[in-house]
Image (tube, rainbow, N blue to C red):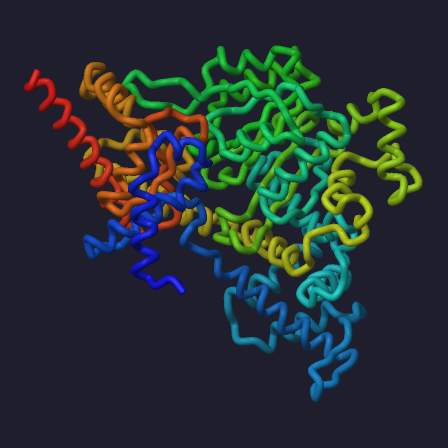
Length: 555
């Protein structure tokens, strides 16, 4: 077996001999592993702590809805034992519905007062009074979900869970002003599963075909760049670039009108956007939203929009494209970032009941409709009436296993409790604190950089992407930038940070962002890490300027 010393030697040899040209082939999320190895070696030699600001998972968690989950589990076990109990072998029965709401209230009254007890008690009252639930049916769903003794029924999403999450999305993704009608929801294993299912079902149902063109709002989360290139999709892509610069030479991470006008091209079948952005970390300004709305309504009523809104809760007054253009929009939302639950794998796909995809399916050529009716004919007697979102559910289990589809019941319970926690937080105390954490760390990063932080109310502050070329061109001059571009590779920034400072950042180029940029996650490290990251970046820039000045003097 290889010793630790041998492993460290092997890693050092591999990272020392790997060239930036080779590393450009990797996704930034795979390149990260190489950078971690380099940073770990750097930290050991300097007796320092490696700082991995490459991942987006936050280092905080929402405690109250988790405590409520475990408390609900205790109640659920007591309900199971009411129906059948063999403690000597560790066996119990399945919860029963009659009068279960009263028993939950009695159970909560017997507990010591806590935030979790209050959340469950208030959730029951909210479900009954605000959402119109039958209390026994609601509590039985929560109880059975905690036990996890059944397949999800309905498979797309549990009835009460769907209503709760619809209310949550109306508050957080629609700024409390949802469009008329209802969004149907598909509970999925996080945003990444949502992406996988959406791409698959769009292709299977002929709504996208190989060789079709889609637009991507770039820079963008890397899988949206990589999935269309896979052989089974083979889609062409057009960049709608967040290329606007401010007068001070900074990226605003906004779309110029000329970029959004590209969507008028009828060859573009769909526009995929992360909103607020990743890595740009900024929501679209009102003028851009209005232009996009006008473009779709007046010129491109056939344009499909997919919006990934995982960071929406980090921007005050955020409003999704799904709220503005519900007929055309597929909404992806993940609970991972806001509630600190990447390991829970909780997400939803939302599609309005009146939507473009169902209309497109109805207009497919007869031969294609017949083929699809045969595909879905084993799960419904009217496959031609099967909605796109329900086709996604079936496709997620290769159709034949549709009867076992759906997100696990414990996951749906935790999703419901997260949603209820936010709905019942009338002052948005938790949400405001999460935003505050990110903004405080952003300020600390800029303090370490020695640079003033400009105000931007549309900034999520979950990430910060720093473009050293733009900064150098504005503050040092084009000769310095040209010198660097001629003698260095853009990846040298993140490589030098890892080797010299034990700091891991993701390269912005991997997101189709500026080549000489790096993305800092402001969510996953302790507050005191960010001045050090800023100082490390500042050191890299100072070294580069000194090298350039030295060459200038020599010449």
